[in-house]
Image (cartoon, rainbow, N blue to C red; front, top):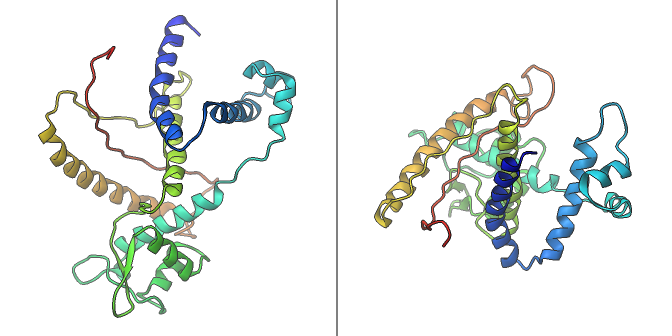
Length: 275
């Protein structure tokens, strides 16, 4: 690593850690806890991704790569890892149900908007929607989840109305912090892919930003960006849903891959360097 690369990486680490540390401090996570978690991830990544081809990754090599002792590497290898699959699966199922509700003719009203749905029924119901877009998950469980995050509301006649165009948890921080873990990791993985010179095809990674905007420009830009971004995401969601074997079991092909695109809005007061 050249000195210029080291300087650039050091600055990048300090910059990306600032919002993360803000979240950690607000939730009572001390530096010691963060350091322990960092050690765990260092050992995981070194063990899984930095082995010598054709050879089993040893404790000694992981210790050399990470700078940890062999004893600590061995201890960390034996620590049970938390499983995020259940949270991720709940998120994906709920998101697919909402997308299908917005898109499929069976669940739209005459004006092309998501129609209020009866809970049960063979067609045009929440139960049939869940069967199509959430596999074997009971409709009642999906309804409970959508109600919990504020995505739907019950009408007086017993039907269920969609009140949001996306699965966005609105109650509590647990699910939102899960999104922090997944979405930020996707962004960093994309940047990692793009900065490695051995990658022939870069992944799309762009942003548009200006740094001398008046306060009055922010509210209309928030609305404009949200409207256009939502439209683009819904267009891409429609394409992906036609190629995903969870919603289209007849789709042919090999392998199983995760792919998508994320859009985020940011704003903050401009600070001169060194302030």
